[in-house]
Length: 372
Image 1 (spheres, helix red, strand yellow):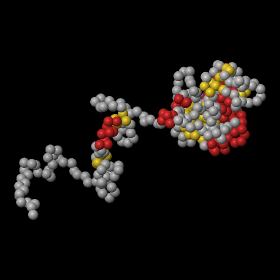
Image 2 (tube, helix red, strand yellow):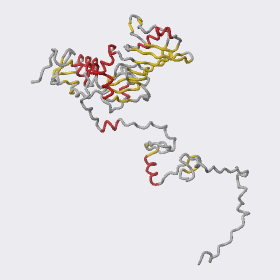
Image 3 (cartoon, one colour):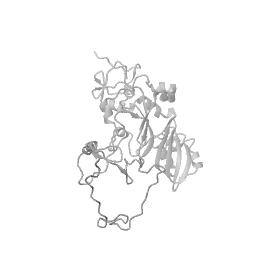
Image 4 (cartoon, helix red, strand yellow):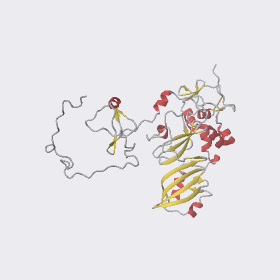
């Protein structure tokens, strides 16, 4: 007989277990439970007020709950024009659709607006995401802001104890003027709560209109020189040190379980593919292009096979690449100046060569010449 889940104090809340499995966030798990998508030991669950134990069998949409993986954290440089969600009702592109397919199922630590760019933390542990985004954790989030308008440092200093706008209380805010750029001003803003559109609303209250917002850091983790749209994993040792014992215990992280191995098919799908070049001009072969690195650009597969039989002579700056007197970039070696000639005044016949009509006839070769 199947074990029954209990509603007492033993075990853990089912939404918390689902979040730690990396399947969804705790809030999403509660919504899935209310929609009747979750079952425990074969019976549908309709309330998140349920504790489960490791012996209970949890399934979502008829599929078993994935086994929990080792806690992992990723740094992601979010570009502008992406929504921080798994599915957008308006059909806008999401960050999870732009991530490589070989990554585990991730959830974001907080969110960044559609037009906000910069550092976004991603993790496969919903419990860790919940702890890090709580205002009680107190991790500082630093932003670089460009805003239209003018403001003085004295006005920004008044934000240090916090401010109330339209009945909403915002905690202490660190703000400093960096420089002026025409009608815009660049600021550095530091907040610890991260409420919905907090930076934009506070600066708008001061008469500024934010036209660019970049998150530089989240707690001890920095954006640094991470490329736009790139993802970088934080080493487990570094993550353990930065969390500390208290946060690690509150989040219930797991650093002992080895990470799940990705299949070869998933790795093949996530290999970076070359960006397509402009369409070929009319008259060229319609074969599928075979992109290769180098100066040649896109080439068809047939052309690539032909080149193996007949090597292409590549010229740079008018000299063949095989010229021993030319360097790899087409210039002559040091100490051997280029020999230049004056342009000919007669484009038909060079003055230093006699024409064929005036040249002396060559003497016929003797039949005994060359014999010994």
